[in-house]
Length: 221
Length: 84
Image 1 (cartoon, each protein chain N blue to C red):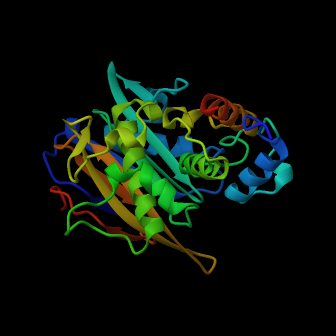
Image 2: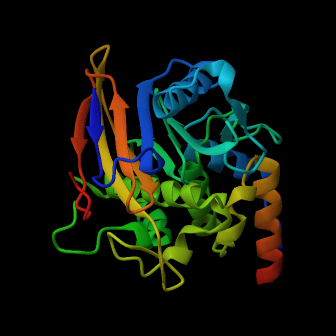
Image 3: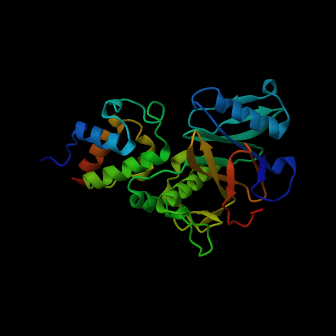
């Protein structure tokens, strides 16, 4: 199943292919395979044609016919998510859970909390903080800076724009909720993708995953 | 009591409680991310817990350094020394 999170030009260069799936062991081969599947969907190229580079402390990339493909990957509990795109993008997924000292953590990420009256609100403070955290992580991954930019430096951010020290960043954020039912256990996950505003973000996910696009940004489809 | 002293065992217990881990798992050098499955938000949760417990402000830019009990202890000790 695929879900379009953002509309825009459909040219290959604007495509952001995202995939999310359940994994048994995030240290095993499932996550590299997920990245390869993203690459395949984006480029049509097989495993043998691409070289993936994962330099320590820097974002992973792939090279295909002299072009750089940007990769981003995230995992939480039993789910993993990844993107492949010709322009930088970032993805983050978090299982909805209790956040300790939620008010203290919340104070660090105010820049990614909903501000507008019509903004999407999560059902409780924990999910709201987790949602904000996925948005922060997706943003710094898209910028390729890791956590060199700390959450509080984004203070003053007003959705849908992402601002850093007063400057609007050329990124849009899309956030969705996923629900899983496995072995009589229900889990929810929050998933954010940060990409250039004109990007066409398509998420591919298993059809048995409950999917709620919880966006309120300008590019909601 | 010297305000710059951080009892390592107290810290171990606090970190283990925060991360929902057995105290024995939190060895001095166990890597939070690679060995204990601690994600980035959990590291921030640890930082906030430490700030409250020890009444000290930790530099958010050093969040990425909280990768083991040993590193958390060093970061906390430095912050307390700075605080005086």
